[in-house]
View 1: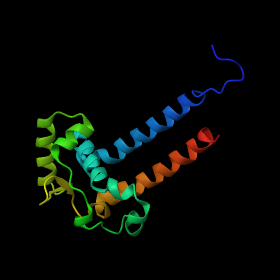
View 2: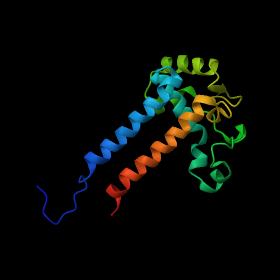
View 3: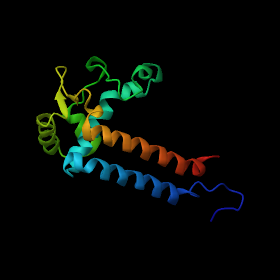
Length: 154
């Protein structure tokens, strides 16, 4: 039992959990049609996308010239992601990752990088259904931020 004066770190955990899961479900619904509702392919593509630019996102001064999604990050600045790294990041079986990556390369979503590993096809996020999904995700993230802001203020 907690004392009356002690801070309750779980005070808003239900609401935070709800809003974060709502965002996740919105993302799955948003991206589902692009990947023919093959959520393994979706998770792999997202994992690769994040892995390609993680080093830039963690360095705001390096990210600044590419902060807008309409500016394509040059291949030499992207870090290719190996199939083993995808397996580790997603928890998917190696054979599933190998097979799904091959399909994503064939579909033009991913490229085999000459340095080893794979990366997102250049400019893909600015095209057709992918761009529509990016716009929807932007709106969904902003909505999530508005909803949780009052819950996380100290």
